[in-house]
Image (spheres, rainbow, N blue to C red):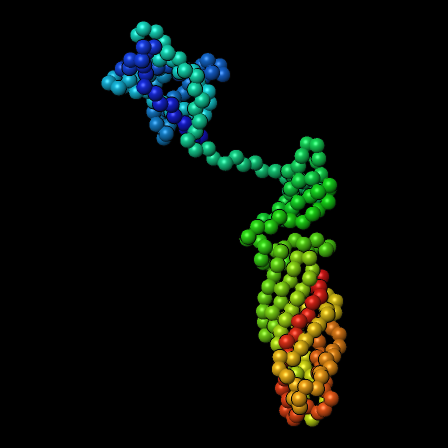
Length: 261
């Protein structure tokens, strides 16, 4: 255990220093002689001991606790009651059960089903009224890999990524947003088309919107945009009132919003 220290210059009731004064230390709890040390490393020190022969300075180290210090000054005894506190107290730790949403490990005496519990490795959950209200997030676990069990988030708050098919953001609540620049091609026909394989798959068919990034040929004729359905691949098509020029290759920006679970 880290040791605390007591330091004092021994003086009498008149305020005069008393070199070489005898000092005795007892535990206040049972009045027994205290175990003293001469330094923080724990080297033994006599009890009683004498203050410095020149300066009357007295010092001892001891474990944390309350002590009665009595110094003989020649004309009487000066007594102190002192609390010795360790210079460094290690953090208190206690291992407790994982708990659950219905019986959290850290709860309240008047509300035993509300508090904190361990969801899994490095995951701290919040319970309220016996119901899982999710996990606690910090900077290290807000962004990472999202996951879920029976619809309850068990991973990070957000997950983002990119591949050849675009970029995506998955949210802990199940929302998935994908974006990509898709090229529609064709020509000598009123319709050009292309396919978009989503960079992250959806659990149900998402809502897809897409639009051209450049004006249509042949003036300002309006485009008609249409698509099929699917959870992993979407066919996109764009039509105008006249034929597209031969070998047309038109860039379109696409966004899909749906759910990953």
